[in-house]
Structure formats: structure tokens, C-alpha cells
Length: 350
Image 1 (cartoon, one colour):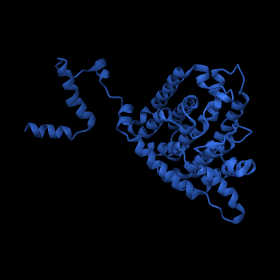
Image 2 (cartoon, helix red, strand yellow):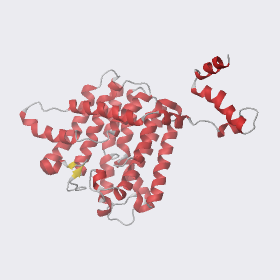
Image 3 (spheres, helix red, strand yellow):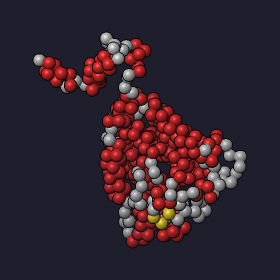
Image 4 (cartoon, one colour):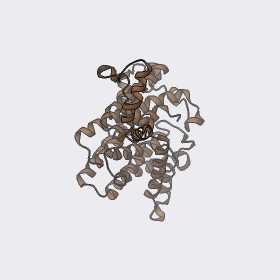
């Protein structure tokens, strides 16, 4: 009888087991006759966000979505005549050069969190990586960051020349919008237009391009403060991450309240992403990064370590991720991939 009784308890939900077995055992160990209640209960309460992240296999999820994304990217871009072979080759070289594929993952994870179908969001996930790739091609040019390596390989302009690299980036950007418009199925047209608007904003003056201009103009300037630095990276870095999360959510039918929570989450992880990048630029090697280390220091850029020091920069990154995760608490375990990706963003090595 005793064994049957315990067997039925084990078959109940995890939280019920915690309430009926674990907490009373802890109380007995400390000489308490009953489980704690009221304000004392909160000391032993399980944080749902922590529990979801702990139980969730982020490594497996990221690999699954990386493979899925790579297949979608490969299928998205083909030359249709001999005259386009060179530019498409240049575009594919950078688009398929590897990478973490964080932006597509964020898009797909947001869709899943709100109960959507990732096949509906896949064209947008591809588009986000196209936009990101365009930014890398242009960012590496001699007129901008002037880098010869990206993801451990020669940059686009090193292989194809500045002229073709510029045009490949231009073509990648326009193809990104065309791909969403032509391939998004099974969702209302209003949602597709909403996605196109968010993607457009992410790369414009109040997005990637505007942030990059400010970043360039602030190089070597001694009076750049933390507010300016945050403005730069809210738009240069966080804007596209915000588009990734919010587009994925919108395609799943997100409400205005859902989108507001997603925007908060994405802005926080976007800034955290840049803080982590700034830290890695001064702590990791060229081999680890897959691009030239120490470039920010050589260009006399304003960075978080430069203004705050390494230790405080690490603290800021952690604080931003904690705030990001708090924004998704209402979604419980459904948010586990996004919670895990937030942690990954500041724990990565490249």
C-alpha cells in the first residue's frame, strides 16, 4: 500500500511532487511540522523561468534550428542565368559562410512561444540573415571597419573586390524583402506588411544604418559618453534583434501586449549582445573570434569596457539579460528557447 501511494505521487506533476514530497522533507529536516506558507514559502519557491531554462536543452535546440536555417538559406538564393552568376556567387559566399544564426533562431523561437507555425516564419528568418549578412559585407569594407577576415574566412571584398562586394550587399538587402513578400504563406496580408515595416525600420536611419553612422563618427572622439554609446548600439545592434523577435511574434498573431514584451526582451539582449562583443574584442584571440581581434581598440572606438571597465561591463551584460528574461515571465516554459538564447548571448566565445 505504501508503495502504491508513492507511485501515484510520482505520476503527478513535477510541481505537485515538489509540494507534497520535497518541501515537507526539507521542513522535517529543520524540525518544522508543516510546509512553510505565506512569506516564508517564497524562499523555497521555484522560479518558473529558471526551471524552464534548466530543463531546456539549449545546445540541441540551437543545433536543430541552425541546420534548419542553413537548409533554408541554401535554398533561398540561386543564379537564374549566366549573367547573374558572379553576383549570386558573391552573395552566397557570405550568406553561407557559417555563423551562429542567432537572428533566425530568435524569430523562430518567438513564433513558437506564441503558438505559431515556424514554416510561416521561415521566409522572415531567411530575410533576417540576409540583412545581417549585408551588414557584415558592408561593415568589412575598407571605407568602414576594413577587415580581411569574417567567420575565419576572407571577407567578401577580399575575394570579389570592393565593387562586387558593395553590389552583393545591396542585392542581398533588396532580396531580403522580396523573399518575405514572395514566400510568406498562411498568414493575413496585414501581418506580412507589418513584418516588412519592422524589417525596414531595423535597417534604416533609426536602425542599423543610423547606428553605424554614429559609431563611425564617434571613433577617436574623447567625449563620447554612455548615453551616446547606448544609442549607437540600440540601433546598430539591437534593432535587428528586435525585428527578429517581434517579426516572429507578429507572424504568430501577437497582441500589442505580446509585442511590447518581445520588444523589451529584444532591446535588452541586443545591448547585452554588444557588451559581450566589446568584451570579446579585448579578451579573445583572432582565432577564437573568426575575425581580427582588437579592432575596436585600434580604431579608438568607444566601447563598454573602455567606459566602464571589464568587470562592470560583465555585470551590465548580466543585468541586461536578467531584465530581458523578466519581460517573458508570463509565457512560462514556452519562453525557454528565448531565455536560453539570452544566456547564450553573453556566455558565447565568438
